[in-house]
Length: 311
Image (cartoon, rainbow, N blue to C red; front, side):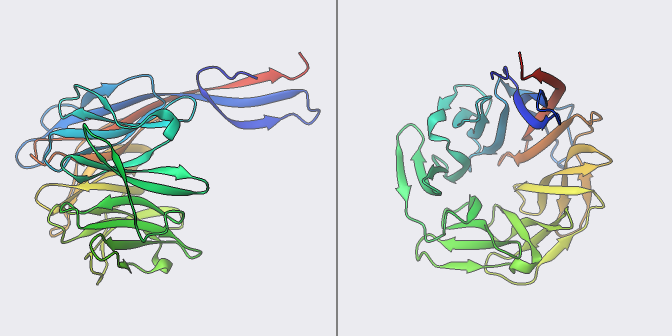
């Protein structure tokens, strides 16, 4: 039964089996940008940088030199493709095809993009030279159990989180020796690592009873620092060039906005001021030049439909 352009979900069958109820959601899948002043406060209002008819344009990330942006596009049919554009949003360059279902774009070096592709129940990990082609990376990490791979700015280490029976824990693999170290315990349920530009810290989020808290930990392991924000949710993704301010999406009273918090002073600053509870923001990335951030902004529309299964 064709469902149209929107993604169907929440199916419910009537007791007599004659009617099917379902919801369909359509999103405005855009990557927005916000200009910043020298002190890291907003300069003006955010606005679209990239917008198309994809279901989501997600995980935008500046290259280490700030000249390019990578992102993943989820189509209405559920396929994912990775694209690289110039820092101003121009000259899109497809890196993968939708059929490959590549995901989690992540810069390994200024001109080299990492991503993963599914492979019969597990994944392969690739290093793709922009303007060239891919080569497979042989990692010691169990790609069937780990997710959210992020490379350090010097390209020497990869951090990720591993799913265990107790919860997530952050692992770090040395790409020279291929040794793997767990730097957080599984019983703390910490994941979603993000490297500071100087490589001295890894930020993450700790999940407890459905709520997420920001944390920092040294990449070699050590004391875990908690960063309280008094927000309902805290989804970390990047750092400022100063390796002090952590950039994240936060939820307060049903509204998602972009914030940063200083690791040293614990000062919290709100960058965006959305009011619509039908939208959300994710994956903020801070330009290495320090003059702007980009992020996914998604506005969702939905309706409930009834299908007569006898007609």
